[in-house]
Image (cartoon, rainbow, N blue to C red; front, side, top):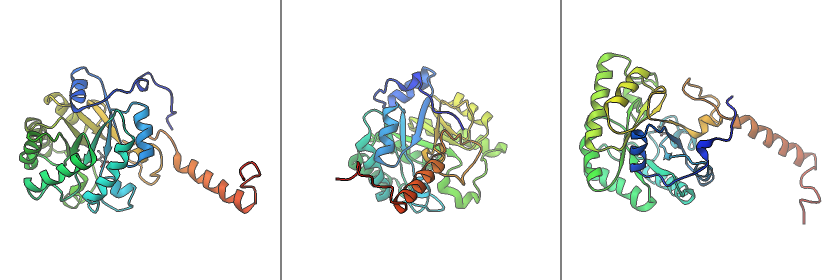
Amino acid sequence: MAKATKSAFTQKPRVVTTKTVIDMKRNREKITMLTGYDYLVAQLLDQVGIDIILVGDSLSNVVQGNVTTLPVTLDDMIYHAHAVKRAVKNALIVVDMPFMSYQNNEEEAVRNAGRIMKEVGAGAVKLEGGSYIAGTVSHLVQIGIPVMGHLGLTPQSINKFGTYEVRATEKREADQLLRDAKILADAGVFAIVLEKIPTALAKRVTQSIPVPTIGIGAGPQCDGQVLVVYDMLGLTEEFKPRFVRRYAELAETMRGAFRQYIDDVKGRKFPSREESY
Ligand code: KIV
């Protein structure tokens, strides 16, 4: 387990915008992103100077207990994004547009992305997919809604892929992914998440586009990194892909605390006189 340490990079939180993120690529400063779904965790992330908090549709899995990201609704996303927004002073808040909230047509995408921006006060939305959503991306950006792209393993397409294995290991898919990244950049995305693709491909993409890449299982050459916060905290114990580094073992810590509480109550050790009125 990696030890949590104090870091020079966590001292001075600053207000992060989509422009800040693009400038960070130009200045070769790594971008940090973690998911956040609730007030308390978002507050902690913001306090230590995380650059971006992603209200990811992974909340479908890790908060709601669904097998895939497909069931989470736009209202669910907005509910969690509100909680995050209340906590955050500096980080850029990006909210995932859930499955079938933008794929149907541009009009629906605008209406739904507009709800996220207007009701939550988010800084940007994230959409999965390549060239086929470029028109929608361009439209959203033109009306003032910043968009983060997401290529490679795109969990909303799990039923098409049939597996969560590494994507784009073959030349044809790798070439397509590179084309998609360029098309999304031309359409106006301010950053692109690259999920579970070979390191060499992520490096090629990173060098080929002017906007930052943020990797998850895409190696160290990306301009930034993202993890699901419950994975890196060691709460999702069953989920152990090699790209997840665990910075804590909170599941064990929490079980220990819960066991102790049960013992204390059953053994009449809690509450004490000092803890009573
Ligand atoms: O929903 C999510 O958490 C994500 C990250 C894995 C990038 O999209």
